[in-house]
Length: 339
Ligand code: DAH
Image 1 (cartoon, helix red, strand yellow):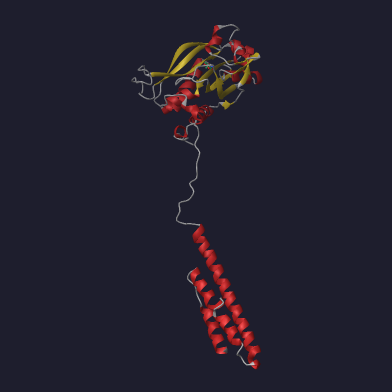
Image 2 (cartoon, helix red, strand yellow):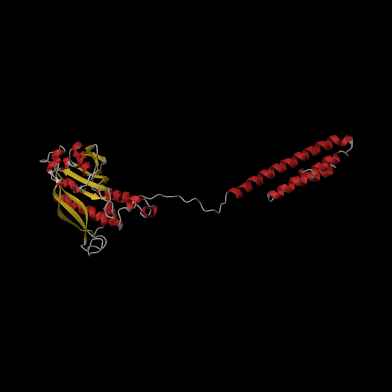
């Protein structure tokens, strides 16, 4: 019998399994009701009494060996097989969903970057404004028809409070707080009570610019805007200034750029004129400086204001302004920031 026990012990030690079904075979062969160990215990009854102690102890050790082996095999296969069950290493990884910037944010940043390269800082004002900062300080006389140039959303209970119609209001806020030299751009959202169409929206964005110092001239304005146009639309871009009217600038002008699509030859975008209007500008009216506490005998300056949507529509050839506000992912995912 000892001989048989040693043979089984060697077989158990040498047993190897390739799969969990081999482990089950092992259990059936050694540890089940009809397995070898139970057979041994059955035979044990016939062992002569004087050998019982020695053989009994050896059978118990064999049982421990078999159980230890079984536990070891079970652990090995359950973890190995769980892995192959739960994780399929051949599956593709989870794609990283990268967001993209909104086209208006991209263009706004480009405008700010261009002006910051020539020393302009950035300031922001508030969207809910008062009459003084949006109109009166900017030389719009009360009851003057110039106020109708911009259809305004007023707060019913207090007509002194309104949604700003342009970011020129930030000029006033900055000049009231700071003495020249001032060289800054003011990006922001503006509101006008206009019917929404492919060309107009009641909410849009502007970037206003302001430069106040001693001896600032119209030539400085022109060179600054030429630099901007070339940086924004390409080195071949030309500009043209046409006389215009704004209450807060004198003289005032509107600036056209040579059509970036046809290079000035004439196409649908420039209505076959070769030129497209992109901004309003002028020399800050001395009344505005005085209203904001700046000595207009010492200082002069220029200002300009442009629509971010307009620049984006020109650069990206977008024909409908409403696309910017619908947040259709198919539209807004198409634009890549350069940096
Ligand atoms: N505030 C004007 C508008 O919203 C744009 C503008 C024109 C701004 C001329 C200026 C300027 O600073 O000088 O239509």
